[in-house]
Length: 390
Image (tube, rainbow, N blue to C red; front, side, top):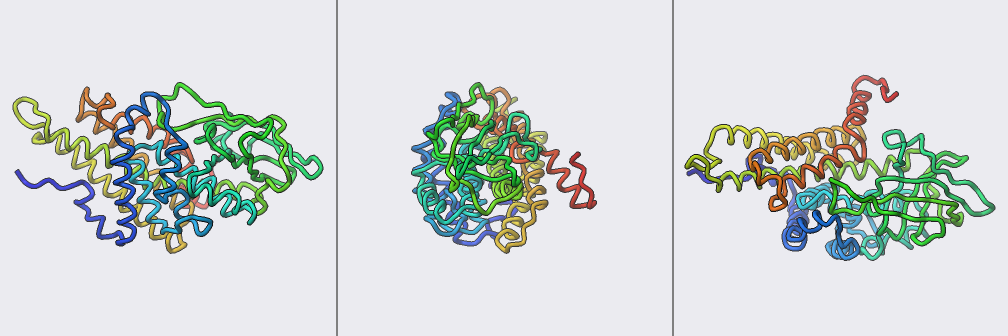
């Protein structure tokens, strides 16, 4: 029997990654394998995670806001951040979501659009995992069309008063601060809403079939009064929240590859051990054809992710290129997860193996932070010069 190679080993993708970035990736890989993977089935089945404990451990690991500069953040390359997202999502999409929302949405919003006082108050604690953030943009009736949001902030002397609802908010009920976007008389503006502010609540969303190892909440704002200093001073209009989403989508480009890799490695290991009709399942042509096709798509997705990472590190990455990555890599990852489940057959539906868990999680990843249809239209606009969103 020939020596088996890993799926990404066929593409020699490690040769495209610098030594420092590989070291960061390997550190996150070990953390997931040793600390997270043994707990995932139980967290997923119970629909709960020790979010605060996890945040502190992830802060010690240095992955919270790792690609940001200063304020206790590691200031790594964009490629290193992407590889960290890959390893986190190889564990579970919910784990990567916790890190993405903390670093690429909440922390990035403060880092990019906040005042110096806001940065000093929140970023060091968030980088350490001592404070958790969430990001309130999506509403019950407005996801792909954030311009239609109904949440409104009105002036009341020197204060602001916020009213509205946000939906599907990762980290919501455990967050110490929510970055909330609202309509004002001066376009869409962002506000920092500390937990415990009167009129603000974050009830959890229950009975999920996806992202069960993740905190998902609604945000309710009922005459929430904030001081003028709570507004993010540099963000005016939808460019503020959309810039944050672009940061998080970039992490998904890598993260989806992590979930797909974990499914494929699981299926290969299972097929090499499982016997059917007195032969290893891996020795059948149909099985090998499935594995070959999946390895091909996984490798192509990884090469795309690394290319986008290099563009981002060079300051050249454009939003439509992030859409290319998210559309392709999430679409292929969910197809790989489903195909791997067929190789595991009945065993594939249990939490003894991660495949169905990944497949269910990827159903959420497919639609959050831009549905596949929205990303198709972003790419279509880039190709034709015509916007077709309406």
